[in-house]
Length: 426
Image 1 (tube, rainbow, N blue to C red):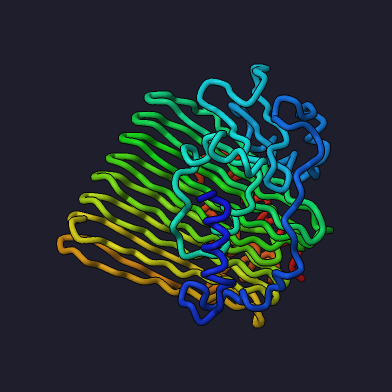
Image 2: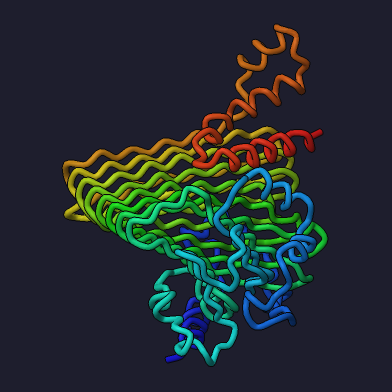
């Protein structure tokens, strides 16, 4: 069966989710008018990355803030830009042309009739069997998939940077990124989700991270979506023996930004570190759901999510640690901390454990509260004005998380975003 048709049938069978389902609890998904969006049409320019405009022309489309983020990230091994899920340009610093250089390749899936001819099944694998309607929509309507491969034993300290630009009133886009790190390889990837403030749009990105034996991946995603954009995203990772993943997410933008993260430790000795920072202001909703899946012995997962809400913003975190039978010696940790800065802001946090094996170490911790008054008093008693005192406390609240980001440039981007958020508060 055509994979698009199969995916759409799965979507029709699942239907738009409702909040009575546990994984959609507190999400407010019922308030979204999905009928107001239509799949974005592909850009009219060339049929392949090599024939599209040069990167300087593409960068003119991007707002100045994105260009500033690119500068902060610093040297890169490649830059890939997508527009509404369609690959728009590929740039390599050494001047290489086309959609391939060393371990980086881009696969175009624009024509549904070419799915099998283009090797979509080989690149994407089977249609993702996930109980998420928006993953099925991504499978059904994706235009292109960005495939990044690091060959066995390769090491590249400069990251591949992907900018997913969302633009078009009432449009729906479906970006797809696949990262495959072969045995013994090491790679870095930075993905930026961005859109202008002026448009109302829907984006449903899907990210697949696949790590081979003794491989290492540092993956960073920066959400700089405009105030009119809604996101329903999904990230999955599968780690083989002794593989190591560090995933860092900064969710600052969007009207409503949801990301589900499933991390499967499939090989003995594999380890994952899942990190996230989020800051909601105005009427923003940041919705994060995670699953730490231990399927092999002596695996380790460490999750640390930190967020703040102000004005009328709402944050949701729901996490599950699941240790399967046979995963003895597993270590799993889950921490979620939330700072509530306004009476009308709200944070929900629901950690969960499902332990099916003995001889494991698992813990979860959740905290929600306002600014510590003793800290505020300490700073004010030493001459800090009330507004400056609160600002310093919030910056300190995020500091530990930001310093864990795997790339120095990403730390600066998140620090600047937090400072900008604080500056916008009355």
